[in-house]
Image (tube, rainbow, N blue to C red):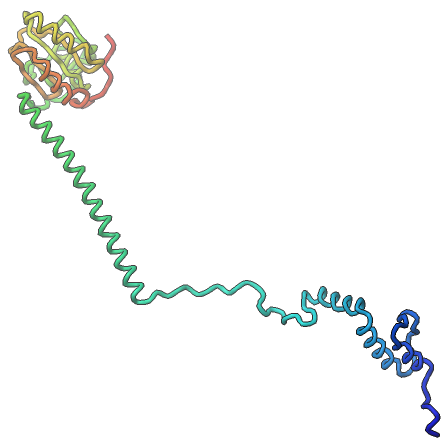
Length: 280
């Protein structure tokens, strides 16, 4: 074979070389199917990649879509992605543990001191109140009498073994008297039932000066409940004020002392203190 002669090439190879010329539409190029078509396809693919940005971009885009964002130049899967790993629990240093322990100790001390102060204040208030009450009782000359119980008698029955006059506890009638001011004496057995309910009885000897009787009447009407003012025949002193197991004899109608007695014992003394008075 002479040098002027060209090597044997198929028409398809010649077409493949011509397809590489710039400016020539790729659609007009026939597809190589003969021998050597692999080279022609490679040449065509290279030319298309350089000259046709559409096809290259589409290819890369498709690859990025299918590969989950791993296109050309994309970082490997998992690099810098996903949730950050949780950091381990901070271990306290010796100094931090000591500071925390001191803080807890100080807090416990403060709580203990506050509790002591609150309890002490409460006890102090109770003691002061009791001391004040005891002083008031001494100043009023109140007599404390033994409790004789509170047995119920049959209606209208009599009991003659009370330990004071007027009585302050013991067997009593099943029906109490209504609270307020009465112009008639109230039987012992009936008034003891009132005392059981926390009532204070203010009783005076018949024949007491009318001004004093009027003062006691006004005092009795100033309370809405649990105070009874009534006469008491054969009373040892001009006036006597009673509550459950308590007796204050007076030589006159001292309304100041009587009000203090009422404040101490009304609805407070008595096994059933606070039970409403019956309506008269």
